[in-house]
Every structure is written in C-alpha cells, then in structure tokens.
Image (cartoon, rainbow, N blue to C red; front, top):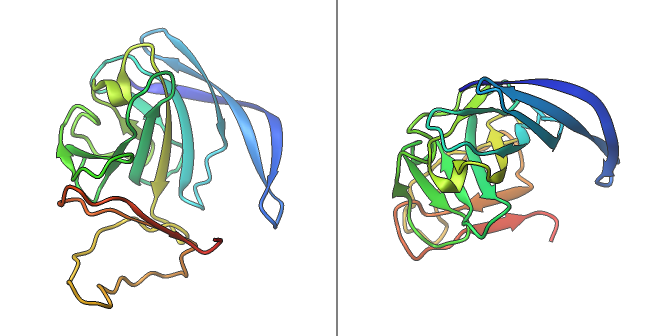
Length: 196
C-alpha cells in the first residue's frame, strides 16, 4: 500500500544549535489507499543532511510503505513504537533488510523478514512487514531514517583485532559515531561524539 502525502503550511519554527539553524515542523496529511487518513507531525526532511523523522500509524499489512522524503535510499532506520513498551528495531543495509538489530540490547543481528518485508528501502519509501515492532495495526511509531550523503555515512567494516583497530576513511570529520558488532551477541552499542 503506497501512501501519498501533502505538505501543509509550517506550524512551528524551532531554533536549534549554536548557528541558530531553523528546523520547521510540518503537519502532513497522509492518505493511504485503504481510505484511512493519517495525520503526522514531523520535522521537514533534510535530504542534504541525509536525515528524516517519520511518524506513522501501523496497519499490520505486509508491503505497506511509509514515505521518508530523503530522495536517496536510507542506509539505516530506527523504528520505535511509542504507545507501548516495545524494543527499538534497527534496519540497515549493513546486515540486509531480512534481519534486524535491537538498539536497546546487546543481541547480534537477528534474521526476520517480517520487519521490513525483506525489502530494501527505495529513494522514496520504506517498506514495512507485519511485525508488531514496526507495523502493528493502530499502533503509533516514530522512525528515524538516515541516508548516505556528504554529511552522513552508514556502512560496515571488518575488525582486525589490532590495538589501533581498523581504518575507515570518511570524506568528512565525524561529529558522531555509532558502532555495533552485528555478528557477536553480548556486545553493546558504542557511541562517540565531538560535543562531550
């Protein structure tokens, strides 16, 4: 099921960061082909930054899609059901879209095609399966989608066991790095940022 969206007038302007960049909050009215109407409030997608926030209501229907507005294929997505105590589900091209990671656990990647219907995102939509962690009927979700750009890089590398580690070349100096072993259980998420 493909949903179409019409962007409405901005309703709130929020200043963020030291440079006082503005983030505009939009109300989106999304009309799905099943004649359901979904009203979302989300920041305007930032295709140049490779980041989008999507708010949606699940329908338990495999193959349903949600628009992300990036104009580029997301490399990693973080889904969270916001109206129930359900784990964060992470999908990434680094493990394939027939598996998932859990943000709030130390589990390795787990094969399960029902999160994203074993379908990679496109440059316009993220396909959902019928798993309750990403698409339970009537449940409310938030999704953070990141696509590779000049400011964002998502990928994988093979550790080498060396004291100075593997070298990963980037076209920019990262302000935030998130690392997770995808094939070893019991390893947590490792985060480093330039602000703290």
